[in-house]
Length: 373
Image (tube, rainbow, N blue to C red; front, side, top):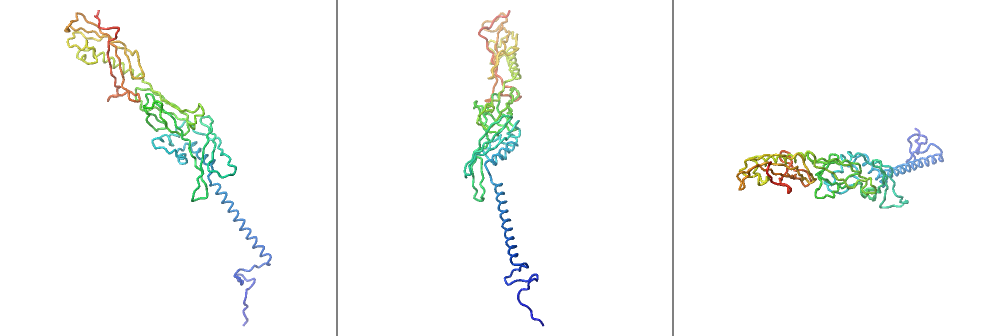
């Protein structure tokens, strides 16, 4: 029976050396060279991973220029909510009624971005940066400077940049005979107590403001506003819009009918006792009462709702008065009408939708009560 050899069995797979490692089957110098090569490969792989991670972190890191480009891209494509998520104006909900996707999407023209350039920090770490954006709106070029602040996050090695003030622009709007207006389906009231106008917030764009609540007796046209950045640096930008309304011909027709009805009432027995009728026509002993001439037109109109009608003539005879009329007499009357208007200058209507009109019949100073021929 042969003796077993103790010690490592060189050349036999799986045999262990005294040090517990697999021996190299090649010369010692070659083995050492292979080991150094392996270590170099591992080092290169680690270096590549570190570089890739650095590039990945750089791609993830916020920069002032990148943040401004992202913000402007939201405005360019009509995403108001995206823009607000980056730079919120911090105003109550009733002041942001026009800062919506629907309103921004309704703009006849939106921003186009030409260039975005951050100021050169010369390699220094800065806490505040300025970025200049060259923009176009409806063919007009202008520039706007954004200010951004660095924000260091405690849970990350990446710094972030935030826009200090976004492009939220105040536009003054006032109305004349217009109680409210709408843009992109969003409606708000106008303050009639502020004739100089109230400010409403918009993102840059070209908007059509539509008059609302005018009723059928006011004609009003829409108005277009160009909202850039609020710096009022050019005459192209709109700073104040007045929605002009006017009392229309339909209302004038109602006013003339009211004048004719009043004259007709005072010239009809049984209806002539109304306080608006002259005292001479309110007598209960009239034997003759007839309308000779009705007003056929309005001779003066005003934007305040005051109208004057053509003179009317009524023929009457009162044999029972203290000085009996032996012959019929004529009385010239001048009708003046006032239309009731709301604080916003819109005609007030009754339950039937008709304008509320008061009529006064007065005797012109140049004429009076005269015998009828």
